[in-house]
Length: 357
Image (tube, rainbow, N blue to C red; front, side):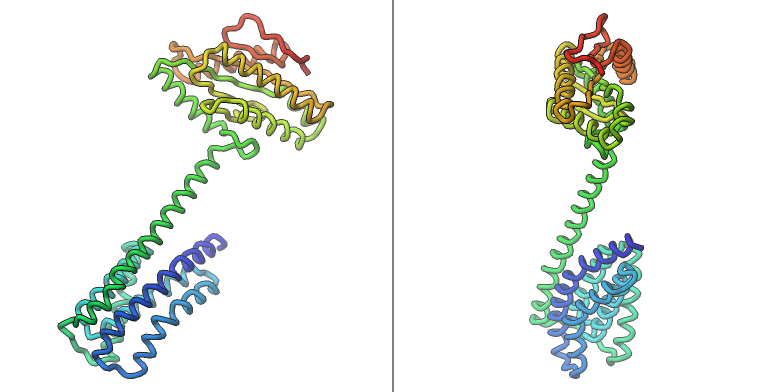
């Protein structure tokens, strides 16, 4: 109900301005056509009500309704009914009639497509029958110059206003879709790419390396003894450690590097067009900065990283093989004492600057 209510209020607000403009311009068109017919006073009063009062009444009716969306659709059908009524009242004067019917049809299609066009047309037809019952059936075969000029503002301005509303709606919808897509690809705690999104980028990087015959490296990063950190200092402290590492990755990697959270306390980085030796230097610097940052935040909390690196190999059958080699390097880094960087081609582990936890 909450989503339907918000959608209905959004629709009501969107149509409020267009209804004010459309009915005001429609009042000009209809009143000039009706003036030549010398209608009674109550007809003028009804025209003024429809053109000046009804837009505000319709908005309040929809806003206060328990289901604003349905209420606004009812208001649109009332708009169509009035349009048909004034067509009969004008004795089917050609140009005002064509303008009224076409503007109503355009509005109904924009709001609800073909289905609502049919509903609006039925409401218009009902309005025509009521108008024929109230006024003597007649036909005015010609449109005077004054009546023609009175139709121009509605023909020129209302489509522009409706087009602008549709454009804004499409723009906002596109922006919301982009935001939802970004959220679906982002890890909520760290702000990095999530597992699935990073794997997609890995496949793209693998295909680029194969196509352009370029080099690249990937790194898998594990926070040493992370479970002990959670058990000793609490999960809030653990989350802080995860965010610290993600912040370091964001600030110390190149713009072309792609970092993600692989899962739990494990992170992953794609380092395009970077030889393995240079990638190892970058990861060694990251490891050192992370240990120093952890000490500055809490001297009692010793943190370190184990990092496994793998270079792109043209003999790899797929990206999974590449990732498996990085995973094997990470396993070797953890098995050989942690707090170090291991490359998939290393025979000996790189010695850590700081003591392992």
